[in-house]
Image (cartoon, rainbow, N blue to C red; front, side, top):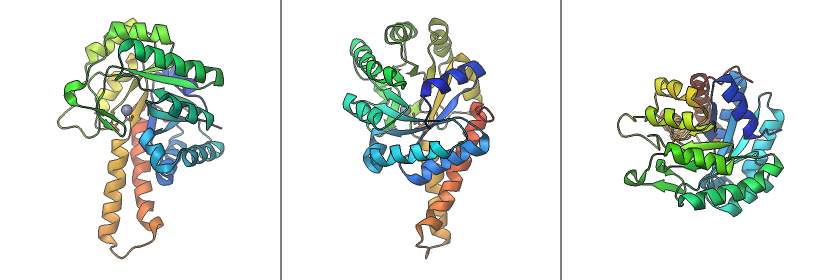
Length: 283
Ligand code: G3H
Ligand code: ZN
């Protein structure tokens, strides 16, 4: 069955590795993620954004994830990614999600604290972990759109106060990553990450990790990063495989023959991330 995000975060913190959280919005993506976790013997977080849930249907995502977790021989959590709407979070909890993110990063500080605490009051009694966000991560992740000029890095003192007052299980921070495809080499603010890590013991989450170098990822994890989000690189693997299949087999009409190679490509992408995050072999 699905495990709480908190269980995965704590094991990752103790073990000095991070668990990959991979976005999905259809069956093939979910299967690719789970097959990768099985082959890597890695814990894994399945996640869907509000846009992904609108596309696939909350009931379908929840049912597929629960079916996958029931069969899996590795720990699997199901997370709502970038939940911005309290009732959406409540619906996910009612459908059996084992982790939720309430993204109040675009709200004033006190309102972010208030909605995060409101979600925690609903989630924690059900054994469900809560991730919050402080600081605004740039880029576009479905419903969450932040222009580069509006992206604001996380303030270490505010992060400590936020974690202490909300008791969130994990905190997504803005230290230079952005959602989507990077234009140029992203520069992570390790000074800031180090400051945050010194000021608060809260588990940290890195969003916008597609396109971040292996070296930067490995440098960030020891500062308390326990969850790393990947969506764009799966989309790229999917799209490239489908385009290649269609180009090489223009008369192919069987969805299994068109989506099968894409599933394989996404699986390999996920496996490679698990090895970089250090979660391989930890199940
Ligand atoms: O919440 C999802 C991730 O932050 C997506 O990040 O666009 O770098 O894959 P990505
Ligand atoms: Zn994100």
